[in-house]
Length: 149
Image (cartoon, rainbow, N blue to C red; front, side, top):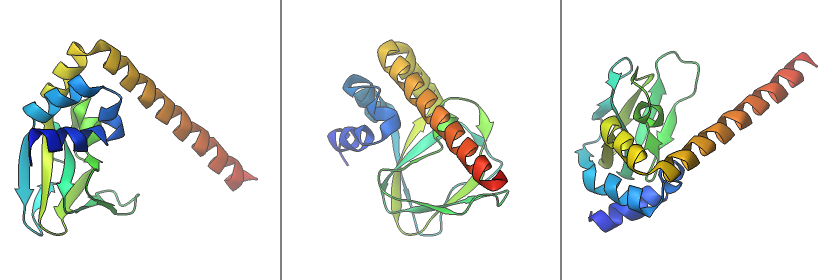
């Protein structure tokens, strides 16, 4: 895929879209494309996480190690490992290619440089994360109320 194709794909990912076109272009140029055969491991639970992946083609099964969440199928345009772009952590899940697949690998270092160079985009991303966190907290309160009541 070309850089322009990568820019279009990354712009469709909500986490990157809020950063703006200039930041997305830097991510597209500085990222790495990887290909995976069916059954190949993208990453394993417990491994150190230093990057996120945007699925270009194919799909991956994401299975959580603790079994508290159902498996997820991540297809084209999905961002896998979003939190690893922000903080050092261990992978909470294993991701395996369900078919021939390709993904764009974006390192935490690259992502943090983009945030530093695009303070307006970083503020918009912070606000988007805050909104998502607030919504998740509200959803938990509603579920808790239903379970108790």
